[in-house]
Length: 428
Ligand SMILES: *Cc1c(COP(=O)(O)O)cnc(C)c1O
Image (cartoon, rainbow, N blue to C red):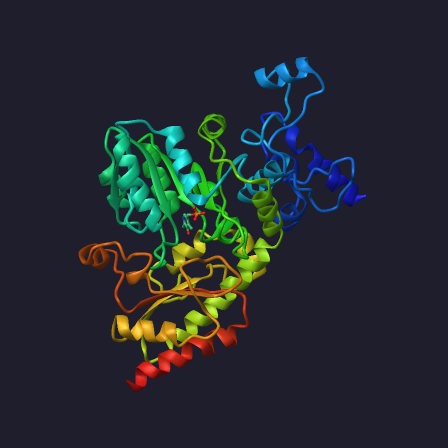
């Protein structure tokens, strides 16, 4: 009986009155939502979701085609507009963010650009922080600047700087928290309040935390963007992204932008992400536990100057990070829930950092993150390599800094893989 009710309720997901993707699942626990919501079986009664690998859809007759095209009849037309597999992913992710609307996109960068294409025009202004995913910095400073959209970069953790940066033409605030790679925390509610005082919107990139650990809409954000490529997939297979919001008007404009400019998500990738969402909470809890254990161990090593991890009591914004966590994160793991990314500075500089990286045997030397496989990166020469030295100094990306996106291997093996190189520094 409960199972049939679940199936019944998930089948209702397309027909809630305002197009909201949340309503039917609300009475279920988030973990049930992650597994059950958004799946609408076909007449074949398949248990796992089918993948609708089709670019277009067929009509019964010419009149139906006309009705679908002019919007008089709801239904699929073409997969740049809607696709059932993509819709399943959108409904599930929206429910997990406790947002009403979601639009899937071809990548995380497509999601961020899509929001800007939707909401801004020449002459508008963005406030964001310099602690941003590198490509997002380039998107604002190299691409959107050419279209007359101006951006001011402020300090992520100083709400006063956000307020001071507001201009008459400010339309959008954009932040990531925790930041990459230094794990600085933004006070999302305080920055949302400043945005709203200025009649601007706050967009939050939630790729690092995912809704399992942080739900920015509940902290005052208007829009959440995701690189689904990272933890939502969780196994490093597909590139994709999404936008989630509670504003119906923004959702409707986003759809028009998406259908017209074209960054739609592939059904295969959407299917992969929907399956990834089913295990997201458990994976994030374990990523967090492993990261916390690694961070605590690194703090005790003589070759390590300092460790950045929001779960450490020594992190200057530990309390704020804890306050902003999804309360459910604590339910899975009362020691953690602070995410899988740790960075630390070794004594010495670039050579010592490279030695630690090159001494690893199981960690993957790659800039990707959000994977079950632990990855290790030297930000100063890779992700932040194109910055000038003064820009790197300002961003506190030192030559001894190493970032580890902690995966789901056994934590003892991750630690001993790093220990090899760290012990060598002590000898040298
Ligand atoms: C990877 C990443 C992006 C870009 O996502 P893609 O899917 O690679 O386009 C944006 N923001 C953050 C925080 C990321 O880690």
